[in-house]
Amino acid sequence: MSAQALQAALDNALKSLKQVRMHDPERRVEIALLLVRLHGLDEFTARTGGATGELLAAEFYDRIRSAMREQDQVISIEPRTCAVVLKGIRNREHVKLAVGKLDRACRDPVEVLGDCLTLRTTTGVAITNSEVTTSGALFRSAAAGMKLARRQKTSHGFGDRSTAKPDQDTENLGRRIGDGLSAGEFEMYFQPKVSAAYQNIVGAEALIRWHQAEKRVVGPNEFIAIAEASGHIGELTLYAMKTSIAQAARWPGELTIAVNIPPSVLADPNLSINLNDMLSIHSLPAERITIEITESELMADPDSAKKAIRGLREIGVRFALDDFGTGYSSLAYLQDLPIDELKIDRAFVSRLDIDDGVIRSVLDLARNFGLKVVAEGVETEAQAEKLKELGCDYLQGYLFGRPTPPVEFLGVLEKRVR
Ligand code: C2E
Ligand code: CA
Ligand code: CA
Image 1: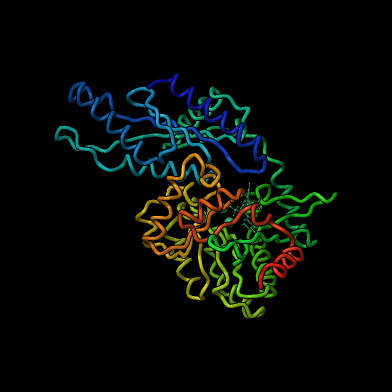
Image 2: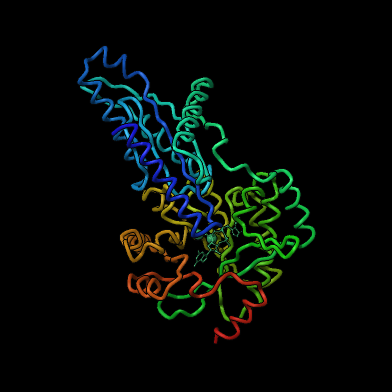
């Protein structure tokens, strides 16, 4: 493989980014290029001969290949440089996770013909969320990241962000989030979750919306990252929890409510106190709340996340791993993760008619670990039927209802829950 293969892979990734954007302009998705350089190959070859140098280069490639997900493309450009193309990236944390895995995989000592050595690598990273970026620009940006890392003597460096669409004025928007919270511009919408077997509503997921001027309703993909960066995420999450709990307490039956909580808030020691207070004010049993955390966020710092989850479970709340299948969790991690549910990302549901392999294996895995499975983004009867047949427990998606404001959602429930 070669530079041409890399260019083809990048062009292909940019093309699929464009397609995703066309079908779903709201979806938060990026692609990344990692350039990984192996150091010390020349000295090693000079010392031990050409054949052993080749063995070392092959080991280098194999380690990177096995550290990455199956859908990531690993291309050997020359013996000492590998390129990795990551598609379907949700955020920068996701990329850092991949780089961390790669670093760890290279660090284990290698034995080549009786010689034991450690691979030393430097990684240059380029990320883009713009489908008009070229493969050349991405390559230059990753090369700049590599240069930066070498200058700063770090294991990896991010290239310049000129390949990314300019952010809206982050600072300004951060301030407007704070003002919007005080002015009551945020609202929680609710999307039903149904049982796969009977399609009756068993609960809902709370999804935040921002009512800006001129009746513009803005979705979370446009502001959650900025709320995190500007320090408003704690306040926003408290608002989301408080209103979701207040609503769920008014619903008929024993319906559950799922709330999305980012790890930065999960780690806050006051969270369990606040949660307990809110639950007792509204007399909602803790078991009716599910906290959703995304797989990629959890894997960014699994040990602290696990600790926080254990603490919160003592109150009785349940946990779901969101966007499952898009991150890098290994089976070993899932095994002792104190969670109740996996939510299969909608990317796999939308491909169900072409390939049901991923969903089958997630269901297998879930059964072994005693977890329930929710499929997200179910849009057609055929998908619902297939998911039921495969043994999925719950379904969520436009087929059963779009996220709706509280009053409409209550109306739906009063009609359907009997
Ligand atoms: P998520 O947790 O994976 O939520 C599911 C997203 O998929 C929602 O987008 C929902 O409207 C959309 N969706 C549901 N069914 C379908 C379907 O059948 N087809 C398609 N194409 N899309 C469907 P939304 O509301 O824009 O939320 C995006 C993300 O923002 C969420 O992804 C979640 O990660 C985050 N988010 C939402 N609300 C909150 C919140 O209150 N706090 C935090 N921290 N994050 C939130
Ligand atoms: Ca979610
Ligand atoms: Ca999800």
